[in-house]
Image (cartoon, rainbow, N blue to C red; front, side):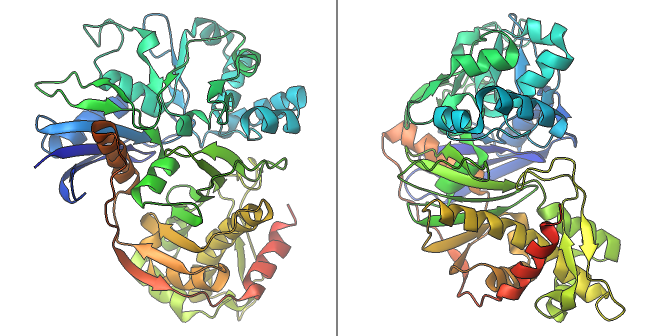
Length: 470
């Protein structure tokens, strides 16, 4: 049996899947936790990756591996390959003003023309500007900038600081792919080139940036134990998930994790001057227009904790409430919001009366708030000509049966629920197989359920009325 491995280094943990090259069948898997926070020492990711690989049985019999990871995180390296400061993650909103400053300098239209997206606090470019403005001594030390998957891939190939690797830093050996690079705010996914003017405007000088590998290209091999597995380019997490579910042009994917994302695979590159939809690249050579909410699964966990119930009971409560939650509306901007771009906003609960303020209605209102926020993204995609034929619902919160019911009430597309899996890691395994054979594998995807929509427009109308007050 020939084996390939895929990695998902997410905000919360690292997952490794090892799959059969021919059929895609899962052979082994492992995982390890990441610490909480919006800024993290990347060494924690490296330790978790090795722990997850060990739990998955190691790489000695694996022929190829690829790493998918959370997008946008800023890993700043000095000339000796040392990490200069903890990496600022996508959900660190301290760079909101830096985003405004950059837009003021180049214009929203200028950014969309040059990169396909209007930067928000999540993007790497804003974090570089924040560091230049607030930590100039650190900014001056920056010799190279990498994203989380870039840095982990570099380490897996045997590079690092003098104390980490016998090969030394060799910053020119940093590699990436167009999907992850397109989320930096200084990369053009149409030309597949970095925009030096934007990088310099953010950081103050032009650092070394990872070389972009083509789809299916090998980036070297693993330097660990007796493994000689080839290393593929890796991907951003959403692009990895799209590969993992086999998404094609016309598919809309909704991912319900720490953040919420709604994106489509498209052969055309849409341009949204409002910044609601980011014009990212996918990992197959197409585009991945995407809208992102900062708040998703944690809306449900926060509300479940408030109610003192587990997720099973939370679902039962929500299903007892009527569609629309008797007028109770939660606008769930608990951690600020990215879509719409309101980094300093807070959540609000409205429509409270003696009759509507029940445990059941609160549970359902939490789910409706999460789904309505993402439905705004679906409408934004449609306004750009991205009209899906079906919706694939994935992520941890997508396994909640009450989420399925609310999704049918809000979304207007048929919904298909893939069998639960590590979709980002699976997509990375697809990349590994692609780099090994030169062809994208055609692995079957199994579905747990399929639903026809039964849309209730009143739910979205009530939500937009309250969200519009921000």
